[in-house]
Image 1 (cartoon, rainbow, N blue to C red):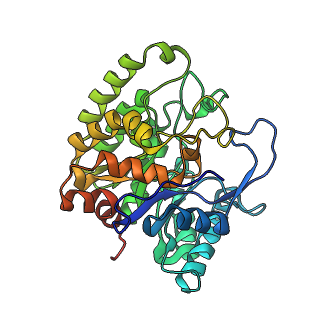
Image 2 (cartoon, one colour):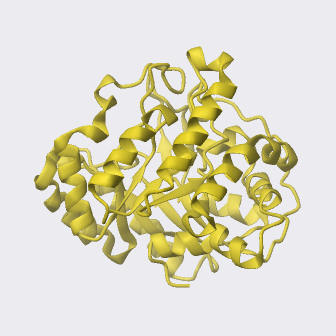
Image 3 (cartoon, rainbow, N blue to C red):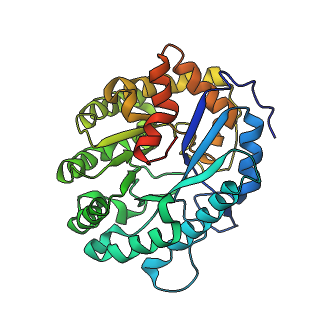
Amino acid sequence: MAQEETPLEPQLPIIDPHLHQWHVLPAPGSLMSPHRYLFDEMQEMISDSGHTITHTVFVECHAMHRADGPEELRPVGETEFANGIAAMCASGNYGELRACHRIVSTANLLLGAAVRPVLEAHATAGGERFRGIRMSTAWSTEGMFGFPSDPSLQGLMTRPAYREGAQVLSDMGYSLDAWCLHTQLEELMALADALPELQIVLDHVGTPESQGKWQNQQAEAHGQWAGLIRELARRPNVAVKLGGLGMNMARPIGADYRDAPSEVLAEEWRPCIETCIEAFGPERCMFESNFPPDRDGGTYGATWNAFKIIARDCSAAEKAALFSGTAARVYRIEL
């Protein structure tokens, strides 16, 4: 394990709004290398970082889906899994951390109106901890994590059935996390316009393209991304997670770690993060670790130090929003 950095501002309360838990088993052609990241690994990582993580939000990652039963209900197993971790933390036996305090699961929104019983099943399994859905939408002509993108994801957010399912999500008071690349942000804008009452959370700053033809057009990609982010920010029902920039999109998740120091991470990530904060304002931005995927860039402690370096000149109120307040509002966490 890499040596952790000394935490900056160690007493600053942090809600980590994007943390996964999983046990990845060997599988040919998988986007993820085999590794284990369950409760013990998470607790040790957070403790070693020295940062004051008060709560985490579990975000779907195809972990512990049921092996049998109706296909549309199998993802409910992930809510059951995350809720079990949350119950462990709520016992107080493991300290003050409240991990998986809120749960963003997955459901097939292409079911349209028929997604309601699936969402009800998630709510039964997760109780008040269940707060929303993320369905796979990230797609690129250049592929992701060393493999071609699933062609069925192209244009997914524009399909009438998807929007019908998202409307049910909105009607039931749940939020939609969406990860898409910058070439898909216009689709997300159209969705936000069509469903203005739906709370949408853009994950990973709407990842600028970096693979294939984009490798030699990074300035152009950033310019396109920045313009789209500023346009997306005009939709008041959209918030953005500041993170996901440590992933290596060229190889499977967990294939390699580089252990960059926080100063390097801050320099690399600052252009994207500052653009988002300027466009959305701190009240609609939240720093996210996106661990374990962002472990490809640096350690957990270095990641939060990098965010604190970037936010160094923010006011106390702005820091409170960026590190905990926005996440608490969006996922309805009582502080």
